[in-house]
Length: 275
Image (tube, rainbow, N blue to C red; front, top):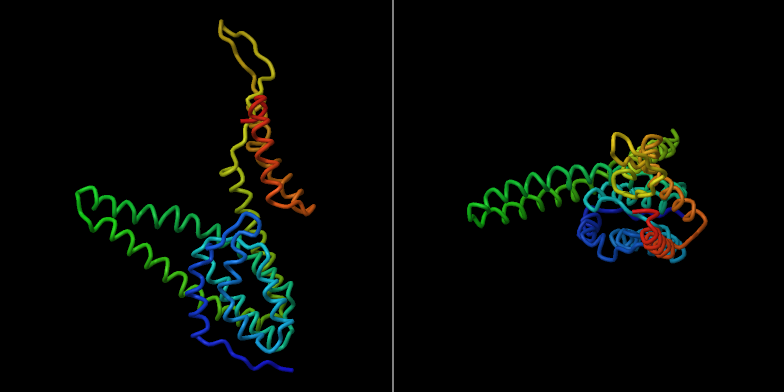
């Protein structure tokens, strides 16, 4: 039976308000999953109000792992709303397609949001505010607070509505295998960004000295780290990251994995294996 329920601008604005709490229950296992599900709850309740079984499946679908930049999440939410709306009407969209779009877009948008907001907008506005505050003006912190939040809120609001409109276009192009193309492209870009961030954010080195010799009256130490850097810079963080990914694929609980890494770090640091 066809579902004629239509998502309105009011519904999307409710989601916009709720998206402020995206990270209100952030956790290490599923990160922003609960916040994402909470944000789109009004839409899911409306679309599946006549079918509790489908509603439960939708809740479960959006309680899976999710993590992206908190200000760049709105286009993803908008697209997912459009896809859920279409799924509730015709049931032609598979749950895997919705899941793949979320996973495929969260990495690239996080890669965009971090340098734009944390690396450009916030330092620029804080520098202007600090230059005013250093002269004793109260306008400095007020300027930073207001200007940054205006940009943040506009990004969330228009990103949400834009994502919803683009989501409709994605649905229209489903016959052209568009979802598969955008998912693959987003996944490639996301993996590229995450691969670059591994070497930047993961700092693991080894102080092990392989050998030493005397040259021109000076003691020269040959370190294992230098040899590894000459081979592949950042190879230890890379191996550690790939090992963690492998363990996660083996269904190892992320919390257990964190305790393993913590214990391993303490032991390796004590015995001067890693630093």
